[in-house]
Image 1 (cartoon, rainbow, N blue to C red):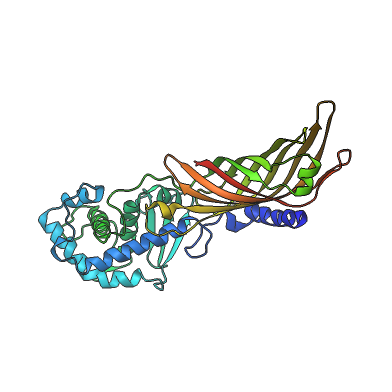
Image 2: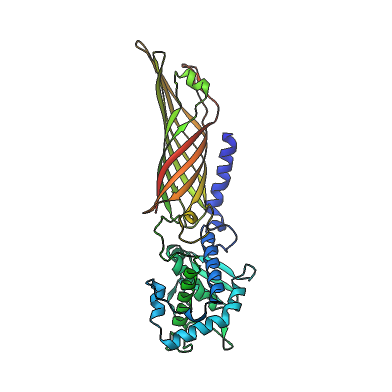
Length: 393
């Protein structure tokens, strides 16, 4: 078993570190980026807003709320509101086709930031109309609220449509939106209007949540649990209980949205009990290094706590020291040794606040060793249940 775990870990680790896929941008649908689910949810929210906009009537591009996007709409003149509403009604059918799964639009995550070619200004996203592709700044997108994500992507989607027979670009005037950046202002207004329609359609909440985000580079954690010892080890060690486990964890992801990362575990496994006047104890200190996979459990509605629940699976290899001690009123016997083995751990992480997560999980450990003097032989895999808390940053 250890050999299989070790070989699998060694196969995955070089692929994580050295292959191009670990560093390259990822198109939506390839499953290589944790943000893919969030992007799909954002697109679905825009589609729901678009469906509602077809039947919205006179209240398009107008609102009375206090959100950032509502504030942008409240600054519009009556002529601008009328132009915005008419434009949306005219283009909902075309936008609906672009929002369909088979539209052919490709999305690419950009890791190093985006700069517009003509203006040289930084951008959160950029549309390549001829290639029918939208580039998205990964770091910026993951830090946006669900409302800001909808506004950003709606802006980019409308770049793929036309107005009065010409492409829609960011520069120049557009209807009553005058000035060199008039078109850009108008596209931002369209994005704000779609945010309001998404709220009215109840696909995003009125206020963004402050639950902890699963998009991070590092995660540190502390868990406690119980390891199921074999009956033979407990009998030889004069133990009447299973082993308590303290699990210190550190995980690292090169990109805050990567699925694969590196993981380090330190385990302290101990037990002491008295059986028939004889006290037995176990003390193990073991470290494991391996790879970890993380993914959202369900995804779905942006900013809901259950859309941020995720799971991790870690596989690794390592070793440490084991010490058993047996004593009574007259004699004490202790013996220690070193051992090497494999480790598999799975956890479910539930978002709390301030970057914290509650986690529940289980582990599978194969750490064979033998103490000849005490006649103790650990040769079977052990399982543990874990409960703890972690912090992502």
